[in-house]
Image (cartoon, rainbow, N blue to C red; front, side, top):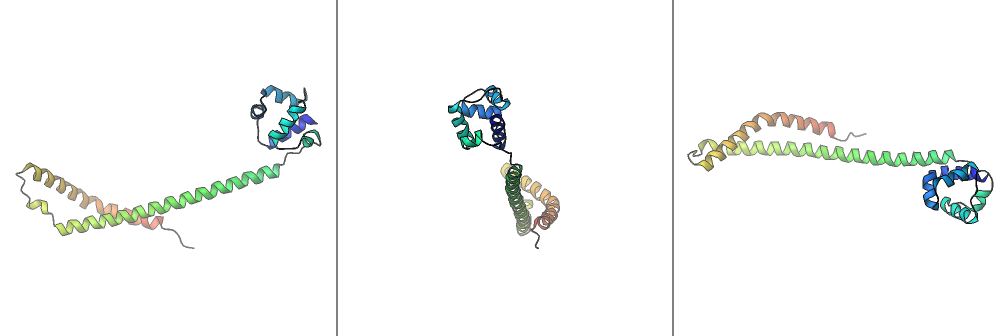
Length: 170
């Protein structure tokens, strides 16, 4: 009966034989022998076992301990619920961040377009005989040329992203 109780309580606490052996400063084979009924722990070891299991010695020596599957399932379901809530929060936060990144991208594209319209391509009037202005003018020209061709597509994509990532009401 003691051997069955040791095994049942160990399993209900989620301990392996090795983990219990480490707690009690014995080898795993000792735990195995106790659970098989080949040997029994002495009085001091019974007290150590009860402390490790957080269970009275009388429970170890008394009736057969029944593993509580319902408590195990309830504990697992509570842990899963907490994990699901954390994942849902992360997903909502990630969606919010992406939504604001799309809004920021739309704002930046609109601002750069406004600046380019206001500047009216000043690099065309620059004096390219000086190396500094030539390099700057070419770089500015390449930026504007690429921006004017890529930005409309990026703006449409960003607007679509804003629409797809907005929080649904209801």
